[in-house]
Amino acid sequence: MKQSIGNVVPAHMIDLPKVFELAAAKDVVSALRIDGYIPILAHPERHSRFQLDFECLKDFIELGAYCQITAASLTGGFGRNVMYLAEKMVLYGLAHVIGSDSHGSNWREPMLSPALKKAASLLGSEEKAKSMVVDIPSAIIADQDTAMEIPGKNSCELRGNTGRQSEKSGLFKIFS
Image (cartoon, rainbow, N blue to C red; front, side, top):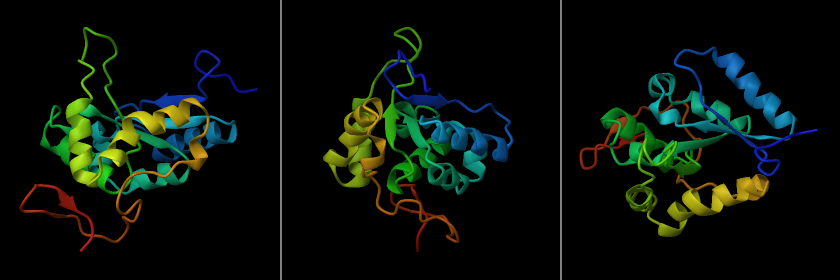
């Protein structure tokens, strides 16, 4: 029998350690899915493994994981490299949720509005950006994740691409 947060939410946030075995982490995601849970990778854009190997995020998503990026990552609060990866994740449908990662009022301000505006700009749609802050998290809480359309222009089409950088915005272009 699956248990969940407060016996209400069937989701599990996964905050990977600095060093982890890729196969073992994938096994955890698979096991959670098999047991009926919704695995959510917490702030993968800030993890050095994903900064070095962006493509392996696709593997986690194909196994059924969602990715929650931190709002401050998308607006540059954790530096340029983290911001670039957060932007790429939004653009290519590899970021499903934008969260504050505040851990309380004294740790990190729960400021979502600037990130919502940035996501809307990247996606060309306020509605798609809003879904990452409201609709998708609400669906996850309601255990309705399988029917969701994930924002992004070219979801998960990463393998075999070069990763050129755009002169105008600094964004990495994955496709030619």
